[in-house]
Every structure is written in structure tokens, then in C-alpha cells.
Image (cartoon, rainbow, N blue to C red; front, side, top):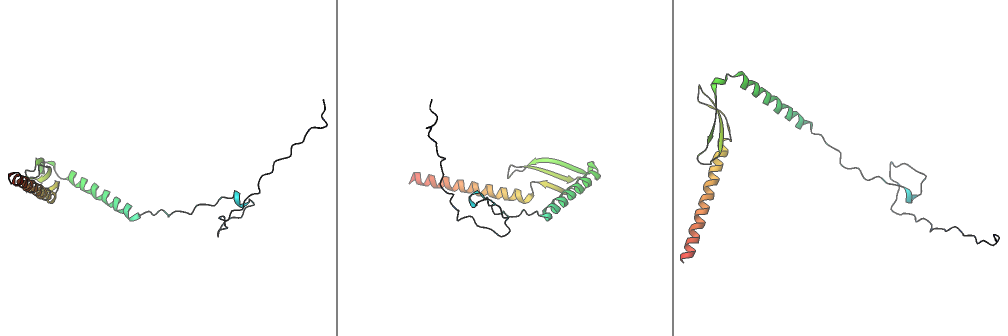
Length: 143
């Protein structure tokens, strides 16, 4: 066995590191001992989160007003308030009404009277458009 003539393997050398032109020192940055290709730059900060305190105040006020209404409803004797469900003839919508039995006055109604009128108007326009289209088709078929 001959060990005297063993070939020696030279260490492989790599290419020299490339300096990056896109890495620049920024104001307020912290200096490090790393070469530029090993550094990390922070991403730009996003927009700050804004908290609208007024919206929270409005929500708190709405909750307080709802609680006050609930207390007022509880304080009123149940015998004076009539609750009923009806179906509106024009819109075919279910309507919930609260009426004072003593005065006959409507306390609250869902959906509102304005919305019911709007639905009735829309239904009428739709029916007129259908009728006009049917008569137009009948005229075209006879011509």
C-alpha cells in the first residue's frame, strides 16, 4: 500500500458575491455588520388604523334609546296596546301594527306606510308594462 502519492483535492472556490445596487441605507435605519446581499429591508408601513369613536358613541346612544323604548313599552299597560298582523291588499305584504286601543292611533307599523305605497306603485307599473307588451305582441301577430 502506497500512501505517499495520494492526490490532494483543492477546495472549490465560488464566485465572488455580487453587490446589490437596490440596497440603500434609509433614514432611521440601523447599521449592521452584514454584507448588503444578506441584509433585509423592512416593507413600507401601511396606513394607520383609524378608530371612529363617534360611531361607537352613536351605537351606544342607539342601544340606550332602544332600552328606553323597551322600558316605556313595559311600563304601558298591555291592555291598551293592540298588536295585529294583516296582509296589505295592494302589495300582498305582511304588515305588523301596534295600535293604542283607547285612541285608535297607530303607534308603530312594519313595513312603513311609505314603503307600502312605493311597493304598490312599483307593482302597478310592472303590471302596466306587462299589459303593454302583451298588446304589442297581439298586434304583431295579427298584422
